[in-house]
Length: 298
Image (cartoon, rainbow, N blue to C red):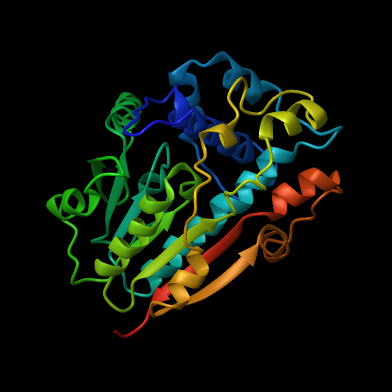
């Protein structure tokens, strides 16, 4: 359960979900026809040494004969990959990855010369990430700047201290983040992003309901999967379910233009067939909306 000011490393609490995401990215990358390629994801999983996720690399979770999770993470990852590349093509040279976890986009994507990528996350998560990347002599394709700060604290000050220029367009991503923030912190997050964004800034968001209607993921795991994708942890137990503003409506009401896509629409855009799924799993898979927003004139 979450508590005020709780912290984590890569093998506990919210950090463990980041390790799970890295596992699923590694599985997608190993697919014969992958949507994305993340050669760093498996390095993180092996370095963490969590046996459950190591086992998943050899034998992914399935619903019947369908390996569900790798495809889902491929859609989500490609959406944010394309989002950042599109923002860079629009002229932006600053990118901020909120709750970066084990995101390796600073190393994977072909950033234009002069791009700075800021990665915000808990100190222990960034320390682990830095150690693994250093051990493997990884070289970023942009000026990568880790910013060790909790998003429930004064992260804008830390970000500006790390070199963000609020007078230049910025591309922001909130991927797999919002349910792990209290409602007040989520609402403040968008307000801070807006304050730090000049016209022409971009924002990519994964948005999904977080209230009481959110399913108990562990129950669905035991009912449908041959093995639990996240092991002993139920990600939904780490969610906050308090009141919060709908991100799409907030952005539309505050000067941002917004394009939204469902998981099914992403699958169609990426020319990927989606297997028939049990109704409860289908509902969960369709729950997120993927938002791509641009700050308009003030």
